[in-house]
Image (cartoon, rainbow, N blue to C red; front, top):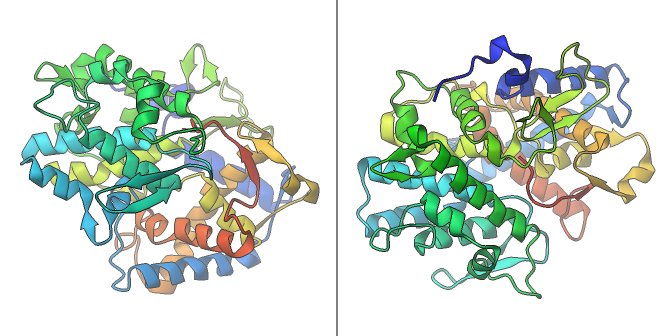
Length: 410
């Protein structure tokens, strides 16, 4: 794969975390001047959000040794590490272990978008019944362990292009226990994403194929061949190599841009005018690949090169603490489509405010960015604080602003 230099092209610049941070911060600055159409910002309420995150970190990680926000945390249940137990049983080590970890991280994150409140997964080995993101994680690791995504019956813990392209929504629904009474939002879209993943990695054999088989997890040894790996390099590589799977309605010159939105306050004099990138699930995927890459190669630096995630738990924390309020109170009663400017504005403010919140959390705990990177604050952290305050405020624990989603936001 030939790397694209984003600095030479404003369109490719959108496929970077720097563009996410820069453009979201610009929206925050406009909002602090009172010139955004949808939200008012009250930074005097930010200390409440900070204190809630600090309390979560001190409760969840009393030693203040906070792991990264990644999919791997969802495989750690009841004191057991499902991934470690699975790979130990199959004697996976070295590059085989690293590639398998990449396989699982990528497909599990692709399957991890809003499940809805009606779906849950019952796991016989643990006796757990979980919904939402945790349930999707549990269902995905069981899908992986079943060998359904492997093209080799004697080697189940792998994900191959051939098996991905053959996956049907029916087969995925059976694996995820979907029924009329246990409905999962976006089942067809999730299956379609995995099918696209299979086609894309098969078309890019020079990057994803090793030992005669194209696998998403081969991104790990491919990245490890570099002398240095920054966290932002993981995201840029994902966005460049997997661009065709992003279900984005926004394209420039036929190039899909992934998870981006339009906002009239974001002005540019080039084709990227009004476009704000977020790359939520692809950044979640990047965070989830850091640990396997580190364990395999010892590399990955500049963790704060990635941004906070523009999702409703983080964003809900700022709304529920009063940092953000809708100017038109009637909008709280409406459900808003993800491409709407109101939601785009909320997501942009969320990303920018997470950086400010991180500074406050570190100050409160007397820790540096090296000791407590943004990835750990998200884990410690903002997501659980957002969930907790949502449960305090609303019986269903849902977000303070209602979303219309088909579960394919990147």
